[in-house]
Amino acid sequence: MSTSLGEITLLVEADLSPIAVGNFVALAECGFYNNVIFHRIAYMQDGTPFVIQGGDPTGTGMGGPGYQIKDEPVIGEYARGVLAMARSAAPDSQGSQFFIVLDDGAQPPLESARTYAILGQVTVGLDVVDAIASVERDAEDRPVVPVTILSTTVSTPTP
Image (spheres, one colour):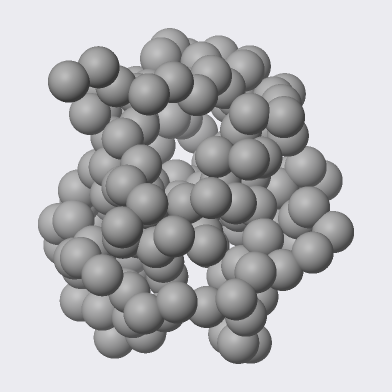
């Protein structure tokens, strides 16, 4: 994932959430995420970094691909660098929005819901994730100057 602040390499693992991973990869392969912003940079009330969120083509936090995918059991733990699908409180409401966990301290609130499909993790570029998280944001957790996903590339790692 090439962003306006640098490169992020994500390792997605189909065995964690086959439907959500397949959806994320298909959207990335067809260029859906290209030129989409990170529309939310959230911190917890105590100041602990929480998540950066992207994948909404409208940039409002309300958009998606025009469809929703079925929920799956959550496998794994929410920790720094984890990539997961964002969703509303409604069942089967995942679409294109995703988030990257900024701090292990975000685990308790994410675990309390335990509804966000884990797709994988950042393998390279946590410094870029941190740079995105540190941009100035407004009262609604939106970046004042948007950070854009310029392009996404999908490849199969070599053994």
